[in-house]
Amino acid sequence: MKKTITLKKNYEFKKVLTKGKYFSGRYLDIYVLKNHSCNNYIGIAIGVKVAKAVKRNRIKRLIRENYRLIEERLKTGYTIILLWKRKIDIKNATYENINKDIIQVFKKIGILE
Image (cartoon, rainbow, N blue to C red; front, side):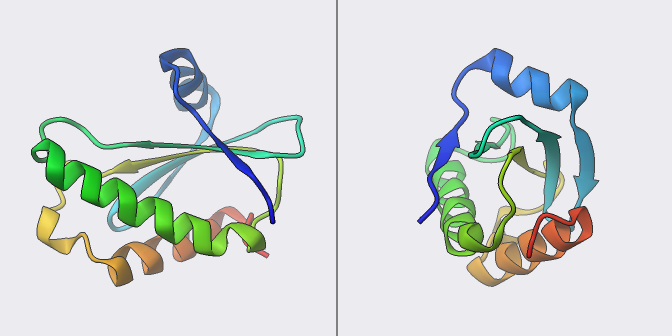
C-alpha cells in the first residue's frame, strides 16, 4: 500500500500552484507538479466563501476517500492539489460526482494507470 503525504504548509501549496500544470474538471481544479521522490503528495483546498465549515469538511472527506480508493492505480512522484470550484453548488458534492471527476481528470493528466 502506497503512502501519500499531505501538504500542510502555505509555501508548499504556493509552489505547486505557481509551477504546476493546471487541469480542470467539472467540479474540481487540479494542479500537478512532478517531484523527485517515490511518494505522492496531496493537498485539498476549499475556499471559505463556498460554504460553512461543516460542509467544507464533508467535501474534503469525500475527495480524500475517492483519492484513497484510486491511490494504488496512480503513478508515483507527483504533487497534486485538488481545489473545489467556487461556482459549483454544494448540492452537487456527491460521492459519485467527485469520483467520476477525479478519474476523468487523472486520465487526462496521464497519471492513472
